[in-house]
Length: 413
Image (cartoon, rainbow, N blue to C red; front, side, top):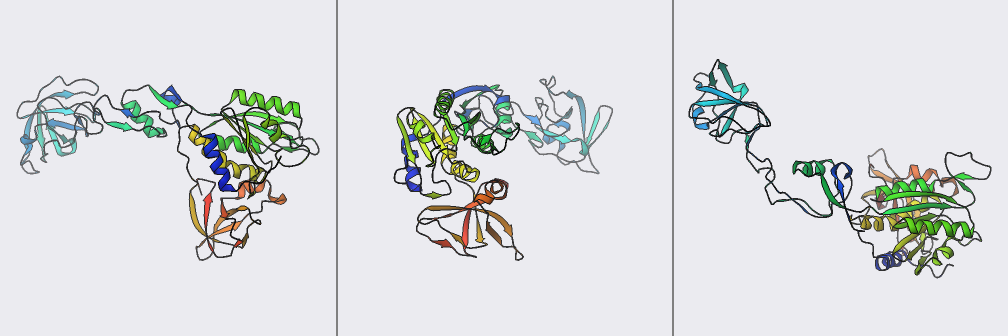
């Protein structure tokens, strides 16, 4: 089914123009379910935070002017008139020359405008001695100094982490509107593939791609649904793909996209609906047989069976689509500058992505060392590679010691 190969840039343009990935809609969920979800709308505070003037220390609420001139040898002497408790309105009002015991977080009683730290005082019965003066509003957090009523505290598009969810709770909210999470069906094809956990028959390998791709979907903001391994059989593959399209917002397959007699995926995907296959082969290495289709409004990415090729093409082409469908911005991979540890060659007119491992040499220079991606590195490359170096179509090679940009595959690198 291969036609003239698209360039990598053409393929990205077709995906942007034809798939038009966008957020799927909104859903209201509880705060306890909101971690890592994307906020659907701006959050405007309906109250001041804190909602009252509160003490920031343990000590005594006072009128600041009553402590002026207080020092170690000449303390100010005040009369204790009561205690201010946490979680309830103050029941006392301070007059001139009075003080009230208070703890951190408790509301400032009427008549007081500062708090003296307990370390700067001494008490005997109902008399308080203050050995250090305090200024007006000293050790007091004023009403609305953290968040003001009417203030936009979180903006649409923000990913909700622990801090953001804490802010929502501070506003008294129990639910929040977020973007829906795109459901991505993941399935593997091939008579040689079997699911992990089962006995490994002779001539078969365990399914790597479904697990690495499902994890990559989750990292991108989607919800993977693993549909298992489908044999190279037209009827079985068609049934599995129809089920995937009916139950998910997007479909990821791996294997069965090359030009062999058992590579059935592109033809079957194209028969499932319009507009059908949009991309059938890209002038890249690795990942040349990658196929992209649109069935109705649902994208289908059919990736190569080679584990490294599948994961790389996912990051380059499918990841941005899932991010946009989840309400996130499509982000580029983080990059670092390094020196090529060896010469890296381009694959004859194809955009080439060389998988590399980063290391330091004796001079503490950061080096990008190519990692085997062929037959001997089909599996181990996934664990060894920290990122990749991109070699354009018009550049024959990257020389050793030449500065390169490494796009990172691992956030922790």
